[in-house]
Image (cartoon, rainbow, N blue to C red; front, side, top):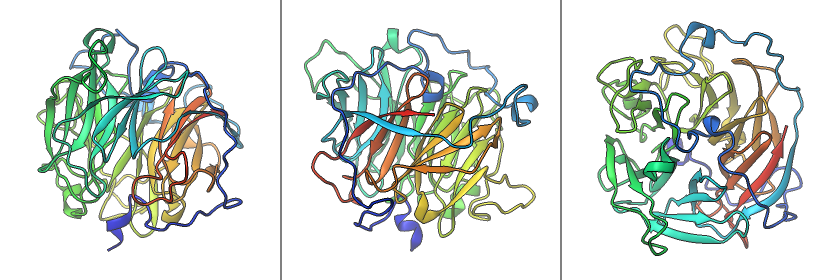
Length: 406
């Protein structure tokens, strides 16, 4: 069935502009730290998040009305320059969390390990293995996020697949211990997210409100997406301890929005609106503007259905052109990594609506693209996904590329 391969494609050939992958990258580029932290889904180190009564970002009528006062939007045409290579030789990289000072934590989906990448040297050092990870299919060690109070509590959050479920746990990172032994025992904050061979979701991020958000999948069981008692096919919002938050649709539930097929990208724009990327099935992949209590249609609607009771996506793509995973906001646009599409999409926004047609970059040059991380201003990190069992890995894969965008 088609849903069995929608994390990407089993195809092995490169495609796109020129066909051949570009290798002319500069090594050893020093990177900045968290930079645009709110868009990245982490908070400034040491900053205390709002209390559990905080309202969700972007939930006010003014925030969802569309264009901010005086907003002119980014230019219709953008640009992407690959300025360096932060790391190479990574095994099935998935989640990335920038550390204060500029180094990176990177999750290996299939190995179940977290490694630290030194941005000045490109050195990759394993800091520890996450106990209980059961990789298989699209499951394994997926999203990473740092605690909003990371400077004091040193907590790293991870979304991962076990033998029985998907769950979110946090671990203390102790740099004083020997490499490979720097992660403390996992403290599970949320369990019981449905698991499957496919459609495990997996992206987590702390929002501007200091709350933890997670994108989940419906595991190929389409009924879960419309079942509000299930955690599958949802975007979840919770306190850092995994509890429901004021402003959620139901006071006793972490479910924030539903009707999703497989959410692997979360990002906030400068006006604190939440955006999410979502895999379609046969026809349309989606970029959605997320509102609390919104029903995004799956499996009743794929793409723009215009049906009462369902929220239409802001932008759609044919599935061969996208299979979207991670997203980030920078320079007035959402930047979306495409797996099967092997390209980086730019979606320029004027408030909450597109300012111009989506624009593709790097098509076919680096293979499958998994994760986008915003740094300061016009700089992004882009993570390839050629070693996930569906790509055609070449020498040096997988990589983290440094980009300048506009």
